[in-house]
Image (cartoon, rainbow, N blue to C red):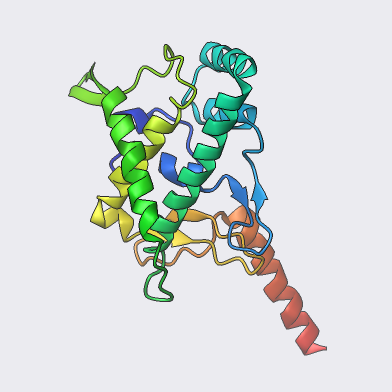
Length: 215
């Protein structure tokens, strides 16, 4: 496992880093018809709760606040989608770079840097058993965009970690899954977002094609 910031190590992550989980909130991300997970601000809150970013009381408080200020909540949802796509493109530029090259639009880094400045302005040092660690008071915050602060920091930390960045890979599913992951195998051989999903489907497809060609 990679060395994680303390706040990230406590989370319920599927893809080793918070920013990767966030980047993967689109189905078939590399296809012509990606499926959006964040259709409402409530969807954004639900993701944050599943990831362990926000406790249930904070989710309920922000949901009620969003209902009172729907335009502000929609603006944050749109901001989250734009930040996610910027992070996705920045990471994709390094994913499997030997096989293909991607150059993210120059505005992507500027967008992440803007989000990072906000995140760092809201950050605090919290005591840990080993000393201190960067953290945010998400449980007590009434900012609708509070859940984006650690996401921005996670993305910046990964992009600024050459060893981890070199291990960012993209799912090779032929339907255009496109999800990103950290390839922690010794020989950088991981090809799928999950073996029990895209990996099994590809395996079944190869088996079918072998049987068909043998007939």
